[in-house]
Image 1 (cartoon, rainbow, N blue to C red):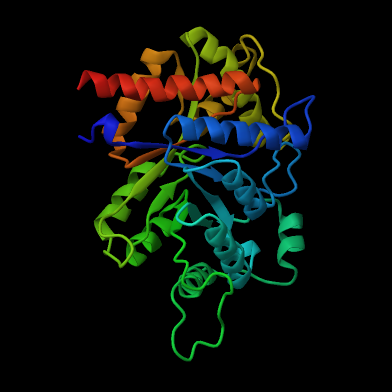
Image 2: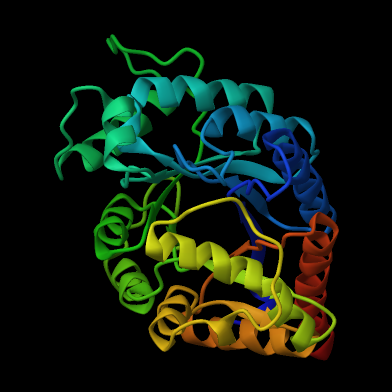
Length: 338
């Protein structure tokens, strides 16, 4: 079994806009959180791409990656992910090639094949482009070429971009990207923070079919883990009600800004709503230090993941930082016990 201290900790930020707050507030909180994650020794800090959502401020993902990288020193910063159907590969290569030149050795390019938005906004982003199943593998291959060394006779060159070899990750919540990542020898991140159902099947497929590549000799798996940590289980459950409200809004199509916590929120819901939230957050680790450590150990045993990418939607920005502190300390306590 993979020991807990051998699993890297990282973070994915949707840059939630809080009730009563502004987009500028959300961006400032994201930078503070990234700085704390760096101080705690996290490996990477990723930003998600979503569009036309009132409570999420990470739509211009590459811009935000640059902002976070500029406000930190060592932590890797990247996209979790760029939704490739929304963008021409050349534009992505130029944007992330520029970031790689500004912040050498610190930029990741995680790629997803979902639109990350509603059909109307998808059409606005893509204009008249119609996506097919073959497009994503072809676009990934084109990005690999554009970010690799320019070849003799190559007519289309990303400038900046060529020769930066920005690490490409494939993200997914199904078996499609797991198989493609295995075939291409790329690292794979599963979106178990919101779609955990196929987690074990996807990572088993990825590892079984993995083909070593010039960039990766062995399979590398990261999994999304919702985390709400507090000094006690009771406080963590109270703080998690902000996440429960967000998830209920996703399920019912009534998305809004991140709401403050509500006492006994789950008890006020219908059983079907509670079950839907529980399914959505099946990989969540919510509780005090002992509970968090036990949750991490269970995930490590079940998945043998190389990395946990934490998602922590806590309404109070200071308590969000505390949540990361407790999560990191829970892992350190395991290290000391070994």
